[in-house]
Image (cartoon, rainbow, N blue to C red; front, side, top):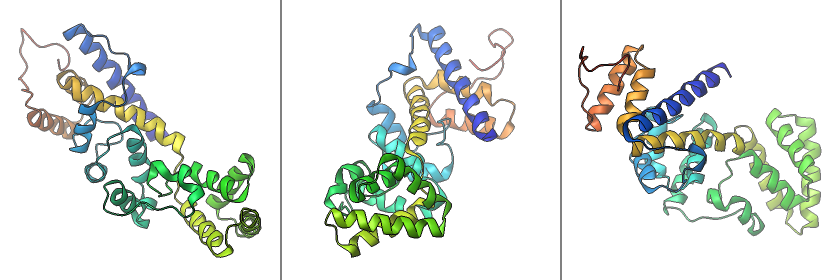
Length: 265
């Protein structure tokens, strides 16, 4: 939590500073809450792994995932946030998602009635909310009971899970779903729940990721000046950002007694 608070504060400072620089240098007003979330240039930059300074997406591991996944809509960015975790990576869920999204594997669903639940993730369960929806659709769970099931799965309470399995199978039977299939789906849900991510949490992260990516894509000079100013106290990050400027064909000038200000401009 402390780490997230620090990163969140740093990113909010980066966004605010970049917007102020854009206003000063170009006299353009940027309102983050009204940004289009289907900007083609932003997704092109993400697809190419151009994510230095982008919230939650700077590391080499997630950059590799992004270039493989090739996000072209906001839902894909949300998925990246949820998939870049040990569970989905180790279980093969991330690879399965990528292959289905890119048309290398056929998209399929455990049961036809689950298509509306899993369509946006190409038939792969990656969110905790999807576990809850599956229980509702296949076994008639109420929303409250489905949330209780999700929590029980996450905490791996054996006695509770045995009771829930009977309840799930009974509900599925009422929906005329074969016992074998219902059991397989329940087992898959239980396995997933050990590493499932909260979609609402991932979406909040993804929105900030998109906003930083958008500003970098459209206003790279102002964005990099703001990023370099925030990180100037760390030599390693300073070198990293100077290298990024060179890749972006942005010239980094030395200090000048007549031109320089207190930070990068």
